[in-house]
Image 1: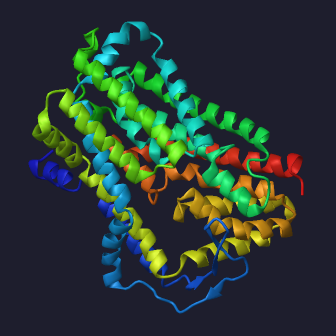
Image 2: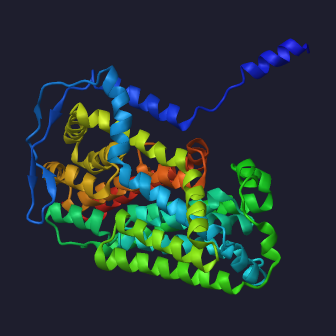
Length: 470
């Protein structure tokens, strides 16, 4: 083969598009859609507890405001402004964990217990996933799980797995628990309150569904982990993980230094404080960010970095997450286009109209499908409940579907797609922290999402036909 043809082949080699390119393309598609989708809105009202909700039957057309050329580019800045709390949360947590990571405490700790874990590493996966699944199902943990990804990835790699397993233990665990929740105040609680059924009623059936969901999720992650452990090159992120700065050589050290022990105690205290703050004081991104900033300063000083050294280490951690953090802003830019053009409510109206024409036997499934589609646009659990349940509640009455089933359809359609849709700030933040491309994550997780989507449909059908009959 001639030198020229080799050169030509290299020149035309397909290159994976940058995340910014993918998301800006989504923004352009959304902008085009604003010329095809009529503008409209629902009236909003406020409940006694201050929650805003959609007034059923109030949808009306308004003057169209399709996105022009300049608004397409403005959407990026607006998206970054809207998602600023998440973007800076990523920076602060990333910086804090780099200070922690440079102490080599995780590597030292694993080295101390490696002999005890030999041959039992696989047990870590169900333990970690059940913990996060339970947290998602009870206290509504989701975004709060992100910092744990930075802990689990090095641990997973040192146990012979890869960064997808480390991320999956946290992300798949918490998403599965959140989706099939039985006591989540942000989804089940809000939705049942709007539907006017007793809060957290129907818990027994939901616990059964939760257990099945978690079992399927755990088996999926374990199956992939076994494959990677048997053949590391089978990992979807084999090349990326080789470049990670994880001190595998420290695994052979069987004792922790005093500073590393203190560092781990500080980390554990921080995580306990996080859980306590979320449950007791309803902490969110701002408070959690402050907590990790305090952790970074204390760990830096304990490890002899000094004020300047801690700051340098913190900034280095932020630098590593610049692209990933800004990706969140691009994702929000796509939603800004729909918001500014007043087309989100029209999309909701169109879907609910389709569902309302289904026979009673298919009504519950139609509501479930509608919630799955809506979650691509509205990824907030409580936000989706406030947006859709005031409409789903009377719709369920018309279709002969129990209000409990309507709540189940909402929650099953709400949480799971958050770990596969590119409009999910949580997913993009998690992948930014994990340094895993969206394409590779999608390739790994989509079969599980498909399985659990089918499971959700089965659960909704069982509830509608056999349990909560209207």
